[in-house]
Length: 352
Image 1 (cartoon, rainbow, N blue to C red):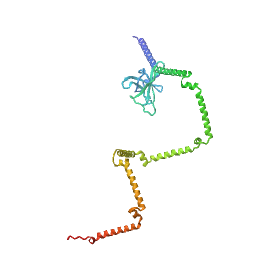
Image 2: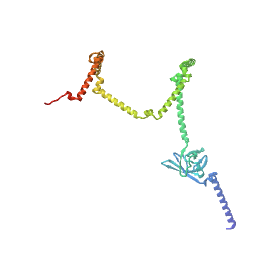
Image 3: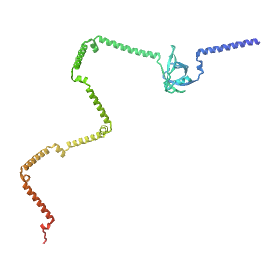
Image 4: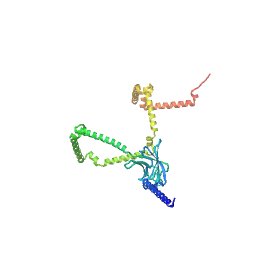
């Protein structure tokens, strides 16, 4: 092979290599659209738990504040959490993801492509670390929105039908509302009532009676304020340590009172049910009759004594006799004393 042929082949090979590199560069630029630097940036992985991912796929972008900062690495079903989505986010963006951050699956454009939007959480929360887990939620899809809208429309339709039925009944004069609208009696009654109230207020404003005094005179308010202040002072006094507070708060007084009442009840029951002396004294009228008779006899005796009848009356009325009797008693006392002191003088004993 000549040198010219070798140079030609080498030129073709170099041209092919250049074309291949250019095509690869073009394809790479089309696929990544200016995000080539993100492929080589350092990333951190963490997990998001979802109840339903709504068709989310691996490789879906992860957005933070509207900026793409990562992608979905894995989607797995777990009995404990439902669906666990593993995502990889640029290490520089991890400081924006906090413990109270949450993830939302949203729809991109009209084609329905899904992506994950991460909230930044509260400023006072701590940033999450690699391998930790945050909560995720799913936006309502078009089917859910349509279902909810359908239910809302049905309820609105029912309300409109009921309103239509109500208006029809009112127009036909059925029910209380129709009477209130069509019957002028209520208006007339209200008019008369308002006129009566107006006249009453005029009378009150012109009079000098009690009602006007209650409205205009502030003394009632002042008295009520003073009474309220007194009650407040009294309540403070009750709260202070003392006998009254103990009577209110200490249950021992109630227990003692209850014990005394129970014993009194038992004692009265025994008196009522027994046939003893106390029961007879209470229920038998003979004692009262005897006492009444005795008091009458004693009254008669005292009356006779006061009149000077009998020995007691004579002693009470006759002072001379009382003095003689007193002297006799004194002589007897002296005789008894002398007998005690000189018994041999009065008593002599002889055996033979």
